Image 1 (tube, rainbow, N blue to C red):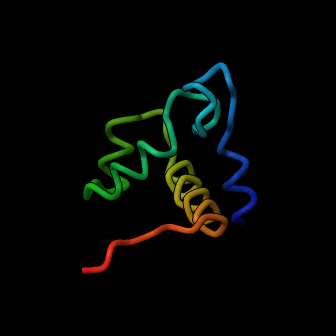
Image 2: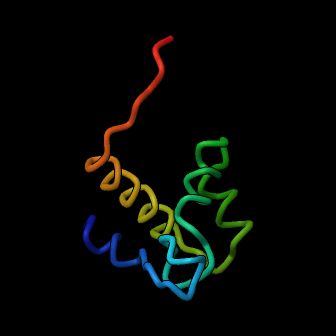
Length: 78
């Protein structure tokens, strides 16, 4: 299922400067992740962007999960 979700994420140098987007739209993966991190629900996002589907949001999460598997992220000590 995850690979099917990742097929929804596209990278096109002509759209959003080549940043990952949803289905060749101008909806950037990072923006959707920021909405979720800010407390927006799936329903909030789908209401704001009616041409998106729940699977698009799940694809953003799957993409983010895959992305951090390959990068070291430093988190400052408390």
